[in-house]
Image: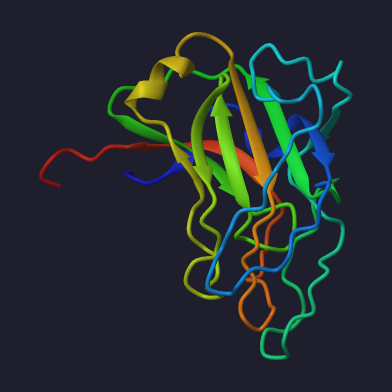
Length: 214
């Protein structure tokens, strides 16, 4: 079966250390043709929040299970869309920026398989929010592209592939995965955001590579 399947620990519903904070300066709405990422400045002492040796407890982080997001969908949708389709989160975070991290015991990656870390949904009701993924303190993937299409982009898988230069990070014992979710100025010209169905959750998937020629 050459399709993507969950891999390793049940990360999607696992407990994560998390910390949310608000941005110090409100960001103005951009020109609708431009999709800039909001500038994020981390609180003092958290500049290396993604590092393996970062002490989340000492830094005042909390623990919660996925998924993560705001309690209520604040968007008023047009009549053709109907009521909000957003699923309530298991752990509520009302902050602008959310940081997640946890250390997992994972089986070794197998030859003949490819792997990716999925970042599904978003903290706020906006599937185009930016994110970054770190593995053992190293940046694996980052997205600041945004999503502006209601029907053509919102369902695409988001996250990062585990390429060859990162595979060894998963074969040396426990793996620390850290993820940030941050706002994007990606409103359409009519002021609406593309709707997000899911709150934020993270997990790893694997897929067996098909034989050449098939």
